[in-house]
Image (cartoon, rainbow, N blue to C red):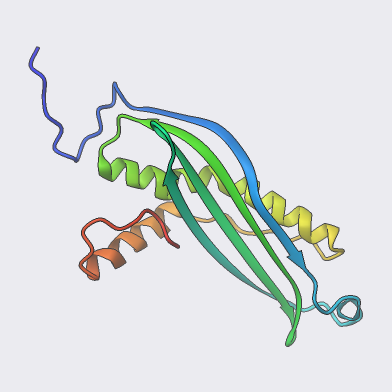
Length: 164
């Protein structure tokens, strides 16, 4: 059998390995700067969600991916609350070429972390005595594609995975 060199476009499917090792909260914060006065206002919220991902290589084929969700909710001009969670995971990933690894770290892993981050934020908000925060699902594949297109337009050969 002849060994074929990979051209960077195809991961070696037989040698590829993906395994979730651990999911954990890296950082969590909640601030209600105008309480208790804010509870006396009519509740007409506007929600601003900021999303960011980052990754770092650990020893061997282990990688940490951190998904940060920051939510600022205002009612009128007043800030009702600011909540942030850094949901992290450790993933064992082997046998992928560079494009597949970049996509896995920039889109697939954050997609796994998002439900945990959303639940942690919702829990924080309700403990702060505010109505539940139901964040809509996020299409990390689309965000990753946008980031890759933006990086390509800027002439970057190999962008860091997923800064959204």
